[in-house]
Length: 269
Image (tube, rainbow, N blue to C red; front, side):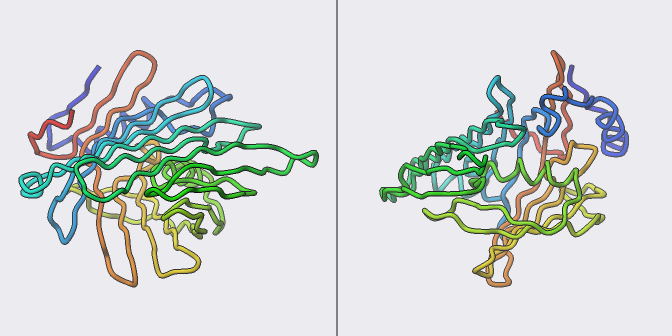
């Protein structure tokens, strides 16, 4: 089933439909975001530079996310880069844990590929420990960790889960540039924003790197199962890039509900 209401009523009505249609998940997966396929536009200085397709799927062990990014607009005429990413997560003792991450960048003359796995163990006191092994841009990665860590793709999962709980400021470890960096996340409450010409009442989350002036701002919509509709990346007080939701499909049993927030005729598939 694909639902595409007439544009004048699309956003206001479809959010109500989604809120009713996205039934609660089974108790065994109560903290998992709903399965989805989402399409985003990457903007720099107001110009769309690339488009990305994100998917989140449940499986018998946990869940997986994928991302495929391709150049758009005039950039597509100049470059043919392709970025493909995959993150795999398991559920252990009710906790979501990242186990594998693969990042492949083709069409570029630099070695930007990243691949690692995490082996998790619990000591006799049930303390969580793990070892990250793999490679980052040709360099070997071997890191001992004692808390959950995420990558730039899978971090979306705890952000979406945390938004439901309105948690106080707390840290998440994020694997970036070959090492684990701590980000302090904070729920800033709700804010009315405009994304792709549409207005949303969104939950605003900020994550700031604890040792550098780097931050991400994420706006999530409850009626979209706390899916981000807008993400901003900031560095040294300057906006570096913006990612905006253009289209999303949610799966529920054997049905699919699709919402398109743009007038674009681009083929995302």
